[in-house]
Image (cartoon, rainbow, N blue to C red):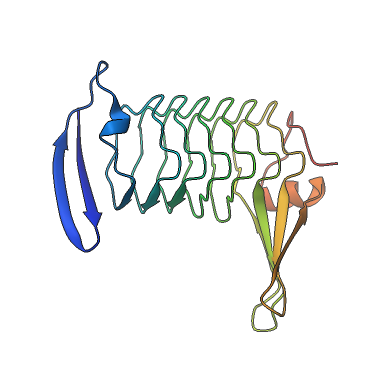
Length: 200
């Protein structure tokens, strides 16, 4: 059972929503919210395509086979969730916390993962093709630096990073993306990526 609290357009909407194995969660989940609390919620198989969530808590949630395609979940907390077989294609997941999350066979192709962390996550057979996994800043007012998703302690056997992207913010504030090389990804993700399928 889960209590859902949402903040919408400056007005607080609090609703008691009880998820059971026989109820359909998609009808209850809002399309837009700030600070939604889905901790321990059963959202498995839900169609959440295109939702707009900011600072939402999905820790320990059942997200097995949930579809977040084209969603924008900024600063979302997915820690310790079961997101196996979940779909995140084309999603914007900036600053997301996937620490200790089960993402076995999850589809993150073309997702924007800038600032996301996956420490101790299970990424077995997860798909990261063409996802933005690294960023490099070369603006004059910034110290040139490179950062990638944090994969410290993550299980990456079979995870596919072919075509994974590094995006660069240049001196003209343009963003240009290209395929990141395997050595850079290893260095800045803090992982040997043993067993993963790496960019060529």
